[in-house]
Length: 174
Image (cartoon, rainbow, N blue to C red; front, side, top):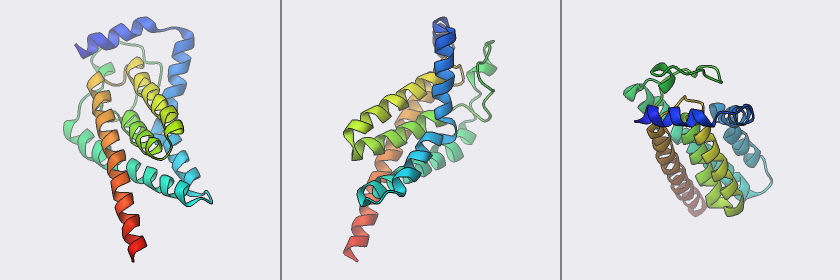
């Protein structure tokens, strides 16, 4: 059923949309855009922004440990392009499919950004959703990989907010 859904997305293929999806997915490669955002925030002269950058970095680490280091190797789900005959528009991703790393890191970051700044956070959530969709469009993840990435990513973002608040509250009390 998931393969049928992915195959139905292939009917949307146009040169312009292909280019756009390749570009959008590349923003999520290795969590690059979110790592850059965290570093940028960490180097600001504003303690609130530094806190946001720290929380963002913690969220990315939490998701990476849970999603990429623990779940991916345990579940070891093959990617959809290995099962269906499809011309990939991007280089074959390495590693397993479940959960989606692009999606998880994007939603972990977007959750933190939204917590600190609703206006920019909405844009981050839209970008996270576009990155997630691009992974389906490009036939490198199943819908359940994306759903799991969203859930684990949001949980990682919320956990990082909670941990950061506790850590900083504790340091202020000392």
